Image (cartoon, rainbow, N blue to C red; front, side, top):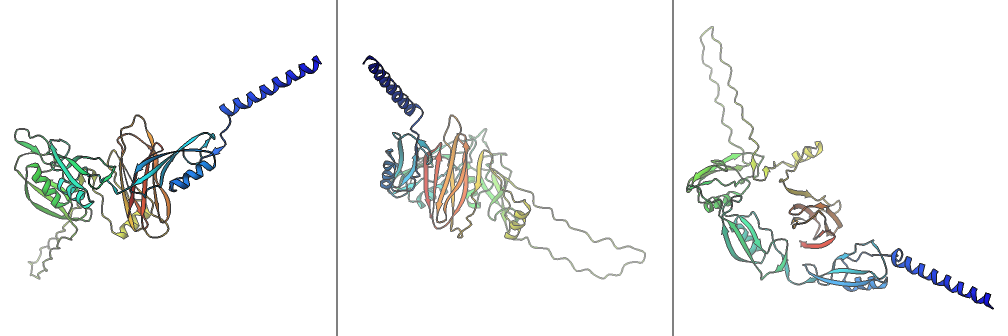
Length: 388
């Protein structure tokens, strides 16, 4: 009887040890048998049903967006992640409403920025002006609310506008207004306290017609307030070719030699330099084809910025181009930035790389019928806009 009792005690101890081992493994090493499904772009009801069906708990966060209310914009963890059964998944869902994307107005001439605000259905708010050595007078330095942001049409957009550098002994530098249109350049001269001194048109195919190439005196020259400044503006009209005088048959004394005909050489238009670097040449379709075939077509990029052009879709012809502009907020360390577009041809990945705080991203993405651009920073949804 004692022997049977001892064996029973041993069996109970073994069962306890095995149960404890299984529980320990499940808690610390096991249980990662669920794969997070893709739930983005689904309705919130369908996404919750799908998550709860496989044993996940769901938390919902609502976000302002132009996308219809109830649409899942982002999820965490990302699709394909393995988790335990008691893991919670976070769904970021569009709140919808009549909210619109705030435009980026920095660098625009103030009157142009106000027109842009009104064209998009917003109202222009207060305009504060301060002296700034790095911006020509009359250009927008900052705005409130800052872009990118979503807000209602009734929200006023306030502007901080430059007065230009502080005058020193009654003298100010000529502003750098290259690569601006002629009328905008005239407005900036007036805002700077300088007079418009006329236009010199230069025939060239390397700069779009109507764009300011340089000024006389050149940018940065210290002049008295009220001095006149001349604009050098590009025109794509060919300069008139002077007619050659017809040669005259005049008798010449014997023994003399006729001087050789004079050869006139036309100097090539120098490559113009604007505030953002070299002005990009404007090529004809045939020139673009030849440049692309030989690998000579280049796109200048402003220092400190990232500019890219999304690949054109191989399916139907594009019906529009989304101009995506995003300023990375201050960061303590680089984070992964991902930009995606969804249009009639499907989902396209426009950008995916690590970025630093303050970096400015600029890219143009063609779309078919309608495009929805979504930006994720560090795996978190930050911005979404619809383009038509």
